[in-house]
Amino acid sequence: MRSAAIGLLAPLVLTCLAACVTTGEDEYAFCDALRRYDPAAAQALFDTGRIDMMADGGGVCVPALMLFDRARDTWPAFIPMAVAVARQEGIANHCWVVKDQRCAINAVAQNGAHPLVLRALLDSGVDLTSHKARLALIDIVMTGSIETLTMMIDAGADKDAALASAVAHGKADMIAFLEKKGAVEHVHPLLLAARTGDVAIIDRAIAAKANLEMTDGVEHTALMRAAMFNRAAVITRLARAGARLNTRLEFETALHMAARENHVEAITALAVAGADLNARVPDGDTPVMVAVERGHVPALAALVDARADVNIGNAAGTTPIGRAIEQGNLALVKQLLRGGARVNEPGGTTWQPPLHVTLNTCGLPPEGPGENDNYRLHLLETLIAAGASRAATNARGETAVQAMTRLRAEVEPFEPTDPQGFRKACFQAKLDYLRTLR
Image (cartoon, rainbow, N blue to C red; front, side, top):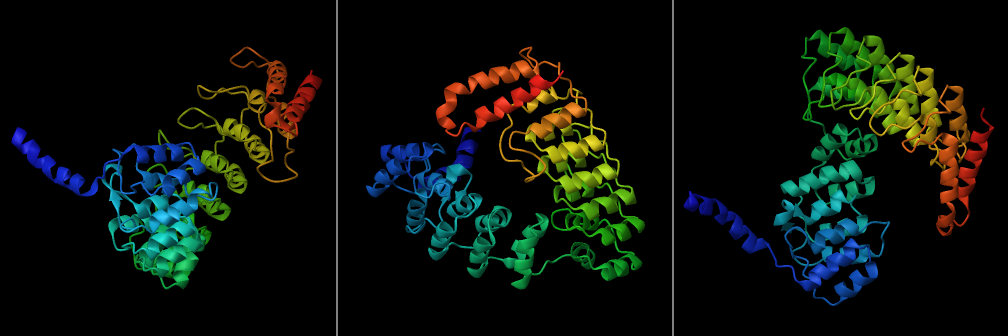
């Protein structure tokens, strides 16, 4: 047994001897500066030339990966250092063993791929045919920009693979760009037509008795693809031909996908066809909750019009209206109230009375001018009109007036962080309003 275990460990030991570089005091100091977001200290250490960017400190301190993670527009001082590291010999195709074979290109791509850092890596000769580089391409499609995607494609990345990823994640702008570049999606004509909305091909496939439940590379059916890309006419034809409306992919049905993408026409077509408006798995959300979480007012309105149940909570017990109130989104709240949401119904272990949830909410309205004011007084007024209890107490036993009085008093010591007095004014306005209630 012991000799067998040694035999299994030997390849890993040899790999680490070849790829793992000991992390010393300088590297740990550099990682500490990065961890504290201290670009001046990091730059001073970097300028000594003693930081070994190949170091792999047991996953605790990997200088290059930490630097690539920090190199964002929000912390521009880290970007020149990251560019310099990306240009170092051997970095472009280096992978750090203890980080589950995370490579330089993956670290940069998972960070949103800053163009300057990505450019430096590409110029240094990243092998774009490697498995890790293909994973990085997917990350860039998911979180990057057309600019960074263009850089990858022009450098030789697989544009067809990029297109498949863009379709899987519903990235319409990247799909259009890649198709102009000549990328082709290698799927059955039925699946392609479901995405593009080519009704003639859909009709021919139905007439030819094509398998309506066939899936693409990420298990999306034709109906799901039609929902993701808002192809209402395709949804109607597929449904009439017998396509399954409620097939699940993990936590989602086609209706969830339409709600996630804010596709009103697809939601309406699915509802008319008889899709389950309240579908959910034990740990998942209903389409209503998906629309609320995403802040999609049009999608929510379409679900309300279709008579979806707006009072079904998520796995934690939070109700849709409770979540909308937490977000301070009056437009969502109005739609949920229109659908019969119950404002005083407890939901979840962290539930608070609705008026209490609004007390700390101050700032710009999420859905633009006109629907909310910056103090969310309209939200308070709407909840009161809907019957929200004024006498309900929080975990401290405070009514809304009592809690607001305390919050207004507590904001004083923090005045230096709010030089314009915005939060104080917001709290005072809410308190004044609550005191007018009888």
